[in-house]
Image (cartoon, helix red, strand yellow):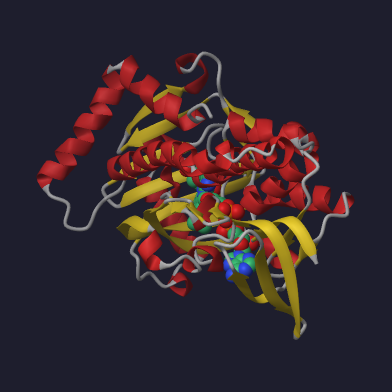
Length: 390
Ligand code: RFL
Ligand code: PHB
């Protein structure tokens, strides 16, 4: 088989890139390690920047998003018993974010791809990339014990943090930057109405919490937990009790609890690899960078990377110009580092760090107090939260 662009990984980055390229008449094949059902069942992000929504509109997969997505004009930050409203729309000249689950984005993209009869190979084992520095590359994999081979002009590594793409690049050709946080997030999804129409990011002496949602009847909550926490030790009741205790007193009464649909622990990490290109392999999304989920930036960065790379490849195939693909890494990294800074800052502000000193606590309090007193400070926060321009 031959294709112009072989896309490794069928998560949001790979699927969106595939649609953007297809729309420009560039053929592509997605090679995905997991089964389709597994990919469609993953519960992850919930907040989409306008840029991400615009890209989904551009590739024609926004019907359900426009019907079911919840436009949020603001969110709350709670510090112990004090709350601060961040009015995104007023602070950013009319911008907002859309609450629509990554699970739904993935489903819409998978369906659009199937409708266009574009090839996605699911359950591909031992995916291996070859000849990355040659004019023509090769991707081999096993499917139901048979070996297959795809030749291509470019490879897009969209296979997440644990994928094969980044690890196919010689260590000497890249530089990695990383911060691992000494805690995780324990998330719970339930068919209960959200505690508030807006998201609440909170800080309590017990640690961070987030009240989010998927719809007005489905809630997503997170609490900061230890890294070595055993999920089996967390009954639903224990989760609800811990969350309720962290909420501002006046909100505790509003918490509606119910059985969990899903419960999982995610570690928190900041990570960037540079550059995003090796030969004719390009890294996109979580394969290239990880942000702690505090700023809701991971999926949105995957979308902006897909946008930049699609433009570069379109320029190559349509105008026979290398200029875009030469720029991809530095262009994407410029936006990535700003989102890294924002997510790191919000993580530092809102979490309880083990061994945190009185000074560290005072720094967090001073930052919250500054946000309360300065519209400029809130504007900076809002501008980053809605997403920096492409
Ligand atoms: P994905 O989604 O990990 O998809 C990669 C795909 O590649 C496949 N794969 C392979 N395929 C072939 N060969 C191999 N060797 C392969 N290895 C892996 C995988 O099976 C998978 O299908 O990466 P992608 O597409 O770059 O998308 C990134 C996003 O998923 C991620 O950044 C977000 O989920 C992060 N995130 C959030 N982002 C936001 O923008 N807003 C949010 O509100 C938000 N909340 C979150 C989050 C992530 C979380 N977790 C679980 C870490 C909340 C949480 C709790
Ligand atoms: C979510 O709803 O899963 C979510 C929302 C905002 C975040 C992270 C996760 O910052």
